[in-house]
Image (cartoon, rainbow, N blue to C red; front, side):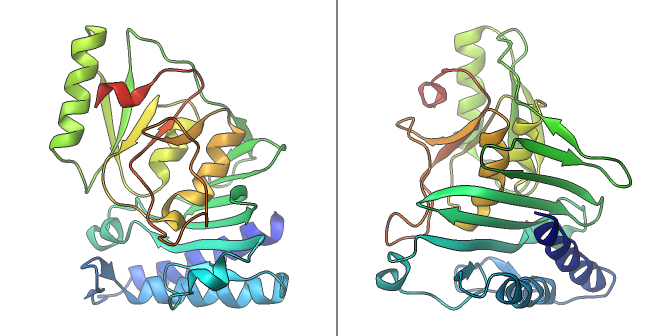
Length: 262
């Protein structure tokens, strides 16, 4: 874990070098933004993991496509998003992260989420709990909270709010009789808000990829929550040809069916 945290922080340092410049923004095939910081962090992480664990394959958002016929044979692999929240990076609001996860048997068993601007760190490993560490402070264990139906708190995307989210918020008000508080945040930090007990649910009602969620999924699971699809099933990794996630709910402890609020 210490080595992985060091790698995430080194990637964060590479990102911050670009952040301090008048960087350019390109468009990928799916029209999502790409900067030199994405690539710089990618190479820092890839090269370090090849030294740390040379026998474990790596899948990164910025890797070339790896055919499913190859991927499906992997029992273990690293799944990384070198810069999660590139839109927030471009906006210079600080709400972007380095995400590194170890997948074992389609489950995220180790995760590190690092926000380089604030030096905020979340990390977890299977059966060892979830932790948050603020800059220059010791790490503290974190836990989800149980839903207080008189004060529901929803985490939402800063860059992807839409009519589906507005309906979700309205249906909470209709069913519970109270207006939910909305916390807007970029990147996988939204999932970490659930893990540390700041919010109750983060509904993602639009496209994401497996590298967007894997690291924070481990943090949330070890804090007592989960990420589930509309049927209530836990998200699995590398279980299908497509690397796209279904719509999902990152949720705190408890058995509330958030899909019923869609």
